[in-house]
Every structure is written in C-alpha cells, then in structure tokens.
Image (cartoon, rainbow, N blue to C red):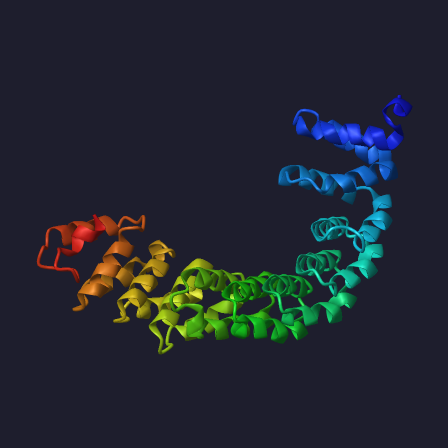
Length: 346
C-alpha cells in the first residue's frame, strides 16, 4: 500500500502524524527506525515542530538511524538556524564521529545558537582532538556560547584547560556564564580543579548579593569530595565571615570526620552566621559530637548557647533529652534574643 500513500516517504509521514496520539508513538517510532533512510527526510521536515515534546521523539529516532548522518550534516549548511541547532543536538546524541567535520564548521558559523549546541555535540562525541577548536569559544562574544564552551571543554577533564575555564569563572562579565564555569569544573571532580573553585570562594563577587551563584559554587566544591576537606578547613580561618560560613556549610555536606574538631572550634565564632552554620554542619555528624555541644551550652555568649542547643535538639541520642529538660527548667539561661535558651529548641 506504500504506492497509495506516496511511497516510503509517504509512509514515514503517516507514521509521524501518529505521534499526536500518545498510544501510537512507540509503535510508530519503531516502524520509522525500520524504514531507515526513507524516513530521514520527513523526520528532518518534522524538526520544524513547535511542540518540544514531539521534537525530542523526532531527534531520538533520527539519532538511531545510522544512515541519517549524511543528510543531517548537509542540512547544517542549508536549513534555518533553528533547524540547524536541532540537527547538531541529534548528532550529539548519535555520537557519530563521521559528523565531526561538519560540527567543526558549525562551531565557527554565524549563528550563536548553532555554535553553542555544536560545541556540546562535539563534547558528547568525545574526541579530544576537537579541544583546540573548542577553547576559542570560551572567548566568544555571545554568553550562551561561552557557557556551552565551559561545559564542552570541561567534559574532557583535561587539567591543562582548567586555567582557560577559570578565566571565565573569575572574570566573565555575565554571572550566569561564571556559574556555568563553576558547575563545569565541579562536574570534572578532578582535584586539579579545586584550587580554582576555592579561589572563587574567596572572591566576594561570588557571594555578595549572589545567593544563587554561591549555591552553584558550593555544590561544585562539594563534588570534589574528600580532597576539598583540607582547603575548606583552612577557609574556616578566613578573614571574611561569609567565606567561613560557606566553608562550614560545605564541610557539613561532605561529612568527613576530619572536619569535626575544626567545626567544633568554629561554633564559638562570634560572627553569628558562621557560628550557626558550623553548629548546623556539626549536627550532621550525629551522636559522636553531642559532648561538643553540651560543653558549648555553658559558654557566656548567648548566641553560642543558642546555636548549640538548636543543633543539639536535632540529634537522636539518649544524652540529648536530659540536657533539653535541664535547659527547660533553668529560665535564667538566655538566648541572644532574651528568651530562655530552651524556647528555640522546642
């Protein structure tokens, strides 16, 4: 019956139309893949859809048809920029190395959406020989391209490129691009990336009125795992209170026992936010640190007592309840807001 519907291309179009019915999509996708090269032109035409959900199906199907690559690469030089960007995403999914020359041309093209997606596609294919072409994109005039270049270059986990990414991390005029650099370095989980992330932690532009950016940076440092513990412990003595606070928060997340003693000292930091962050971080270690908090409850500084009691109340241990009862029965012990110490814990 293919002749009746316009041959194999007509059959492909019929199957593509079935994607509007969610109950028929899987079967239609299998048949399109079986059609092979005959389904490629209609599927490329279908990439013009405004339905992003359907677009993902079309891209995944094209990526699973090996014979689609020649026509896809040809499309990169002739189609509308939106379609070109969608095509390079397909080539990144398929990881077909024969597409590398066309993608190398795409990263040098005039359309920034195509350049950015081509960079990511090249990184997904994973041939390190493309790195010399990707590195200049870190200086692209478009922020979207610089962000994509950070992700693409970092995927190769090559320490020799970390300096280039750090130029973005510390100096890019767009904070969203710098955040991409931080996330990218964190995703490498390479110890050589850690000093650059710690340098950013000490840069006030990363945390002064930049809570979301700081959150990305802390997650990146946290991904370094145990190798970050010593530098973070050192940061607990930084002159900037915010740096000390973030170091304490991150040490709590990494949860390495080596940090217990230093966090135990930091709960006495008279910068309220630092002491509070240290107490919350220390509480995550549970029962082994109960005695540290009990000792802090007799400190003359009300904020230290307050932070310690709140943190202590979050620990499940038989020694905690008697301490809370004692504080409940001693209203003379005040917090920083003048209320009894036990008020906050309850």
